[in-house]
Image (cartoon, rainbow, N blue to C red; front, side, top):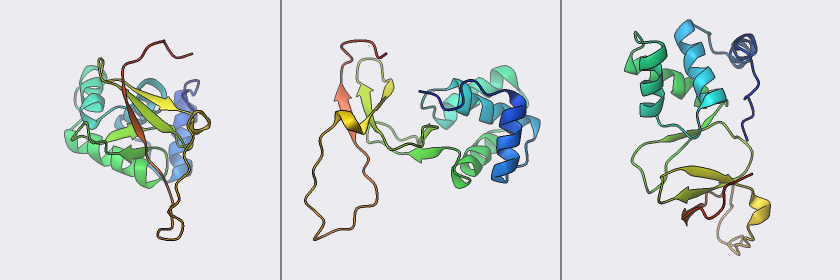
Length: 142
């Protein structure tokens, strides 16, 4: 589920300012795509989108804006073993992922649907868990 799917440009601009990011036209376009339209995009996905809607944007601007968005807590960057590229996730709530190996699409998985009981407390202090399920989507998500 998209946290920002119904946000208007003015709301995204306010969110950026609130987060300490100066909202240039290029950064606004990048933020809008990542927060409102994209589903687990890579920097290449963002660049391809920007080439269509804002053809004068540089690769450095895309990468720097994504880095800023991560640093300011608007998105998080995730590296999965199935890809060399970082995937940007606007869903900041605790969740896992399912990779449909047929399509390459990632789906968010609610942790309530997964039973995980690690018994590592004596050895490690766990601060976060990233889980990637792989397989084939059998039924479309709601």
